[in-house]
Image (tube, rainbow, N blue to C red):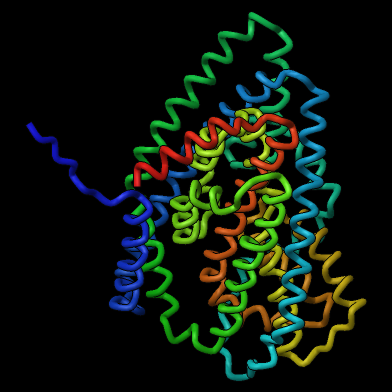
Amino acid sequence: MKHYRIWRLNLGWQILIGLILGIVLGIVFYENQTATTAMQNIGTMFISLIQMIVLPIVVSCLIVGIANMGDIKKLGRVGGKTLIYFELMTTIAIILGLIIGNIFHPGDYINVHQLHGQSISQYVETAKTAKHSGIWSIFMGIIPTNIFKALSSGDMLPIIFFSVFFGLGTAAIGEKGTIILDFFRAISEVMFKVTNWVMKSAPIGVCALIGATVAQMGINALAPLGYFIVLAYATMAIFIIVVMGLVAKMFQLNIWNLLHVIKDEMVLAFSTASSEAVLPKIIDKMDKFGVSQGIVSFVVPTGYTFNLDGSAIYQSLAALFLAQAYGIHLSIGQQITLAVVLMITSKGMAGVPGASFVVLLATVSSIGVPMQGLTFIAGIDRLVDMGRTVVNVAGNSLAAVIIGKSEKEFDEEKSQKYLTALKASK
């Protein structure tokens, strides 16, 4: 008796079809408020489903991973390596954005008086608050006075801080902690199962999110800033292929293998412009790819706050673009100052909604760009955000592997088996 294999599209292709369908629906329902609202609500429901599962996965995986690690000295070493790596990669991303901006001068081809501005009021107040908070408030905010409040607000750094200490405490009590580890291990397994169910709705969520964006913005709105958009995407591609590729090669890793593993997640991140949408799957896949659970569960969630390479590229390139558009010449010294300000400000805005745009708001005034300039790129922010989210996701996935390899906690055999299984399933 013959067995016939039913051909069906994998999730990556389903999401891609959802993306194309969303663009078509956006064009069809351009400026149709009823259709736009419906698509926005469906998209928001999908993102809410993802947010529902993110924190239980982060907390359970982190507690189990840190408890298995068990050594506070080792944790300190891993934490130090992780933060240094993040800082180096973010700095390179900022410098790359400035170099590309200086070579191609995207702002020279724009007449600011012919551009249409969009409201940025939702970011202005956030920028003012963040500007006065200072870096010390960020450090102070890492320690949660009420872990349940941090969980309810989704404040990632305090949650990581508490989970790390809880995991170390569980390891310290020995056999008594076994029941706690079994409990959290079971929670993580349940939440990964729920993640697989939620991801089945991803094509619908993607279609709705893209459709709402195109319906609001319209294709014509992209034309005046098309060169800047293309340049931003080209810069991000250079960062992934060249910079990340070289870093991966230094640690005997083929960047294309990593990108093959996370390609579905990259498509989803691009479509939703949300790093959170893929966090559960990235944690799961990096574990299957051979990185120890302790490393993955610490590095990936921390990277979502500190390792935003795509955002760093966009911020430096956009700042230079606006300066050029307004005819403001920045000397080498001023650009170095801009890079330093971006390095500090981007860390200070960690966890702030619309962080990339808020960082720009808090930074461009230091180079003499009028606030009005940001209203001109607000309309395309969502479109560029899709690209920078892909870079952020790829950067955090690479970081987990690099830190794992540096700690000799990367299983090459497991990695090859997983790669082979992935390629065979296509």
